[in-house]
Image 1 (cartoon, rainbow, N blue to C red):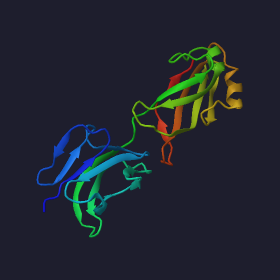
Image 2: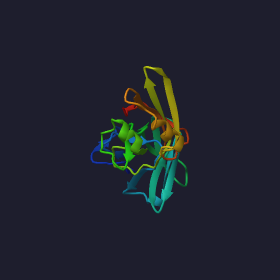
Image 3: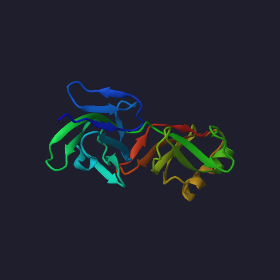
Length: 213
């Protein structure tokens, strides 16, 4: 009996029939799965009840919830990944699909404060008004993200650099006190922003630098 399994992953719109196989894949993002978040995966069969099919992955996990299936990987394991469709009773592999496991592209870092204008961070008065930072990913996912820490370096030609380490997304009282002491000749740069994305425990370092003054 010829079996046709349909696996649909995130944002599907086109179909690809794999030569010599019964598997049909539909995905406009070239079968990309993202680390740290549940990636919705759907599958269907015209001839075999869905209740008799199970999805498994080489690494990470397949989560079943209310009739929906998600792939999730909480480790920073970028690279290729195969998801298998198996017969639930015999554990026989019916077919498989190759996916690429990636990190989300770096997000945009924004400064928050009562008088902040988006993209305008220059000047001593604005720095003293700054109360924290926030993160925005440029995609359609609802991505839980935690800002672990960031650094602010104050450079003055008359003295050594001052490097401030701020824990969390809100400016701490100690850091705010140091920022209140800057003078017109100082250069102030925010950098080494550490974030934690989704279920991934290991923090991710953003290479973005923001010149505050």
